[in-house]
Image 1 (spheres, helix red, strand yellow):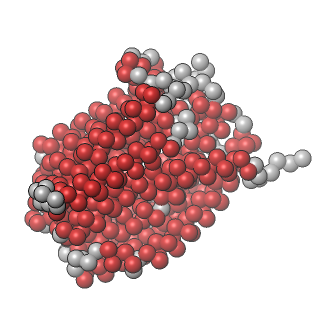
Image 2: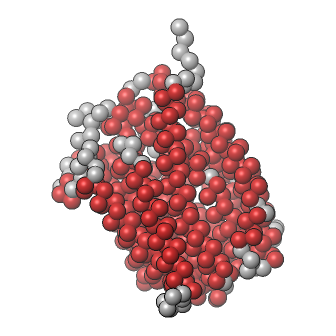
Image 3: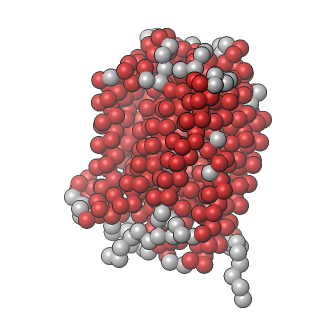
Amino acid sequence: MPQQKFVRDRHFYQIFAGLVLSLALQNLLTYSVNLADNLMIGAYSQNALSGISLCNQIQFLLQMMVVGVGEGVVVLGSQYWGKRQLGPIPHIIGAALRFGLAMAAALFLAALLFPYQILHLINNDPGVLAEGVAYLRIICFTYIVFALTNMLTASLRSIGIVKIGYIVTASTLCINIVLNSLLIYGRFGFPELGVRGAAIATLVSRCVELLIIVYYLKFHEHQLNLSIRKLVKIDTSYIRDYTKVSLPVLVTQAIWGLAQMIQTGILGNMDGSADVVAANSIAVLVFQIISVVGYGAASAAGIMTGKRVGEGDIGRLKQSTRSFQLIFLALGLVTGALIFAASGPVLLLYPKLTPSAAALTRQFTLVLAVTSVGTCYQMAADTGIIRAGGDTKFPLWNNSIFMFGIVLPMAALSAFVWKLSPVVVFFWLKSDQLLKCPIIFWRVNSYQWVKKVTRDT
């Protein structure tokens, strides 16, 4: 009897849906923290909103690098999990922590010592820069804490433990909203600190996040049994294994984070940059919040794909790969429709936007409604199937060629040589989300990405 092309097992979809919902909720809560900052600062002043948006590009670069470090743990850890060998995973986590904390420390020092110089690279508006520098001088103290929390969360995700992530983020959201209200506006006797208040609120929230995850690891997690001793005294041979898998992922994520900073720099140096940067900040946040299920599906598929590769059943792996692709495409269509529907109502949340910024926000959001269909398919297939299956080099070359060969050159030419409108420039900046779809489809269905990256223990 020929094997079915798609997964028909209800239990498979139940596991997948459970992972997706948990990861999507975590992503939603994470972006809700950003939305709370965005709305409260946006109501405070447009310059403050634009200034924080600049600083968020540095945070995004850190986030991309931390994701790269964490994904190395997920790729290796999920394959060992599929083989029912958990012993190597603490060694892999220890290796990841060394890389992640070193990068976070480097960014912290750069932001602490040279805040104006860094932000001036991506914007030239004095009012925006003043607000951004005030925010960055405080928010940089969250970088190491953020990196540590997210790498420990990734270690749990590699063995299918995802619920703690949204519990942690929900706590952060509540604390952040309360402290933002008190410190940005100076309510109930607290000083009015503006952007500095928002930064302090985020710093306190990040510290609480770390305390919760450490408490969970110490008292409630009994599979890995992590301890400081285990994470410090590791078998150094696993550093080589980890580096081989994670270095391409880390470089991919770092390049992506750097490219996003360059994109903000292009938008931030156009005429009327304060309006353009504010519109970009709002439109991207709308996309991030609505697309949480798509990103959750990518992460869930990554966990399950890595586990299937570890199990060694290529027939079942092909079934799940085909099923995942249909799910990704359907999620893309739904996401695009929701973003389109939100393009008008979102402006009601930002009454202090200038008419120009409001018009640009609507235009940028409509662009994202179209490109998000491609994002939900190709991003999820790239990270949730190809990379999770052990091929970490293809995403590096694919993303680099499209970003630096097409997206950034065309956007820069449109902005500074041809002097086209901001919406055309913005479209070029997001065009790779559609352009990458055919090559991702070919690569996924070639199954050349299936690579076992574990060793027998």
